[in-house]
Image (cartoon, rainbow, N blue to C red):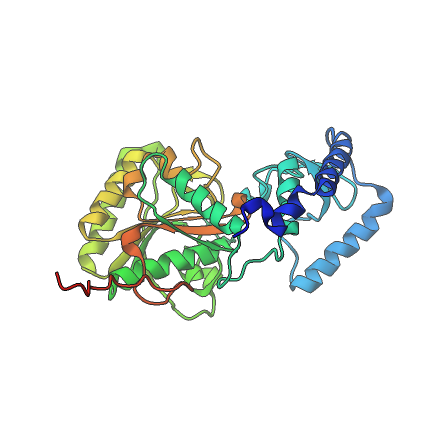
Length: 349
Ligand SMILES: Cc1ncc(COP(=O)(O)O)c(C=O)c1O
């Protein structure tokens, strides 16, 4: 067996020309970023082209984007150059996707290393060493305050990470077929996630893929009253459909139309009540991961012991579903081989 440095892939990474190319790219980026020093108006000559690019984008995508934003491909931290030559502060931050800042040198380095892989996209059937590295890193981060999340499944969108979490929850709590979520939540745009998302217009014409009941979210201005209101609503649902709920779906800081955090006490009360009825707890951290005082929002709110399934995305530039070992599916739900049952010993003693 070759040791790792004998692998051709490692020889490629260690090739002095690769190191030199990386240094040259970083130096070129630094020179360009030095020119991103503050706001700049659009360039008159680029404005017409910019408008036509936006129009073509609207045509290609079948509708105008929410914002007149077409990035040039360069920025510095919160500053971004748009394709009309203007430099603006990015207050939207791709709702987390641009959380590392624009044109971060580490992102360029990571992108370069990704480009050196034999393939960039990883199919579910064949994985590469960075998949192993990221899964283990995420699990280590998730467990640093004691959460028992032993498995990590990578995916390419937050909605897919959420779908996987929901599949694992339903599979483990069958025949339960309902979910409880907070008012105003957003979970993605697949058919199931459109159902979970508390926006009737986002599911116009779609079949009912999922039975979801909602409880009021936390109101920080009336914390005690809102806690009691949410708990009472949860209790009512659980009693109305006994044994029918697979999961309580929680976004610890709701990210639609502003940022609305709950509190440790608020969440703990809800979760404890749900767990009395064997309901699994899913933290949708697609927006919150990497944006509070700790990597995970459940760590920020000290809910580590209560996490059953957690999804992340956006700032990580890839998405993942983390879950407890006892929730391992017993059917081929997730494009992996099933764990083999222990073979009984053949030995005569
Ligand atoms: C809380 C939350 N969950 C899930 C999603 C879906 O993620 P994606 O757009 O990557 O599918 C979003 C997207 O905005 C989100 O804010």
